[in-house]
Image 1 (cartoon, each protein chain N blue to C red):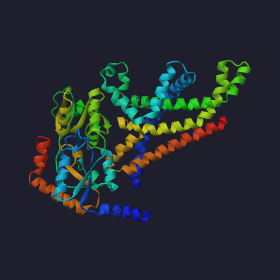
Image 2: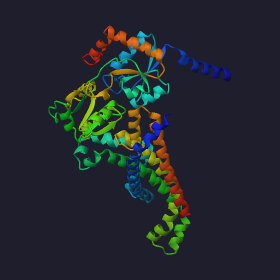
Image 3: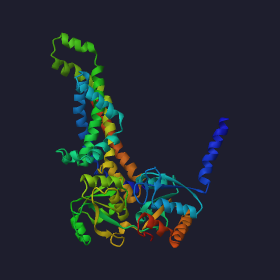
Image 4: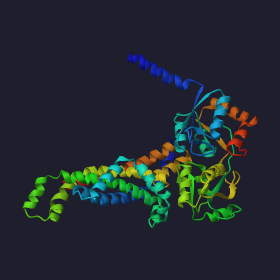
Length: 258
Length: 222
């Protein structure tokens, strides 16, 4: 009897990863409107809808897991997930470790703070001068840390694990400013309407700050070429038929498709 | 594993050692001083104070250190009264919150270790000291403390190691100690294994040093 149960368990365990229909997808649902958890505990957001659309296109069942951003990459490398979809920017350094799909979105970023204490800053040099000696918050394991360290060396970079902790510390005055994607600023500004969260300075574009990478892509473990080809084809068709633009309109109010 | 990459992480990680040790020493200092006060108040059943500290020890031993750290760092800052208070210039600093949270936590455990040490001394010894006409202070200094210290020291060595590992939580409130730096290197190079294993070996060397120091002191005391 016990052997049968054991045999059953082993069969089930070995059968699971082999089934091509189920894809294990992970996201860090703390970055609205890309991904977040709603009042009912469901994961919602642009990435979730894009991910589900891709799964539908390649006829796979997506099994979503919510886990901290820092842990996404190690878990992907360790084979715990097939795809990570979490507003991840495609960069050269990251390409050395994992594979990326083609970009499914482009997301501008910006400095922001509470109030308009920094005034009108037209270009990078004015922005860099204004950030001299200021405490600037960024989310950990994010490209913004590199960006601030490289181009705003006189600012004091402070790394947080979650974007909402950055907002909390802007509110307490521990941070003078922060760098996040424009979409995140807009979302947090709406959720914190008792304080005036405002963006300032020029938009941080991919041309001026190469740290921002080549757009937002889906992460796959090295060597999953077959799956990557399927995902790429699905993304291309979703961009082609306007699905991504429509989802972007729904979640951001503007088109983020590349 | 990329061994060359891992080796290249050590100089960067080493800059976090002073931060880690600073938080550790600060927290242990608060822990010993406050722990002694708590221990004395509870053993002597000082009215009100004893009850308050009973609750204190229960709370700090019964809740996770991370929760305590977040409550002090993110929680207190929510209140305008706290932000307007004279303590805010200190409480707004992440390092101070880390030292305070770890110190308050260590005080709860240290007071229990001290209590165990004091209760471990045979009552007959104290009665004998009394019979020899020792003053209470002499009894404390010459009879009680030397023996209680010997009993408590191994357990306290354990507490120091636990606190060392507790300092890693400071990285969650944006402090760049060893773990914070490892996190940063891991994200820059996308090399979590190399970064965290390197950090782990540094913690191991520190704790081996601490352990052997404690066994040296223990041997000297016996």
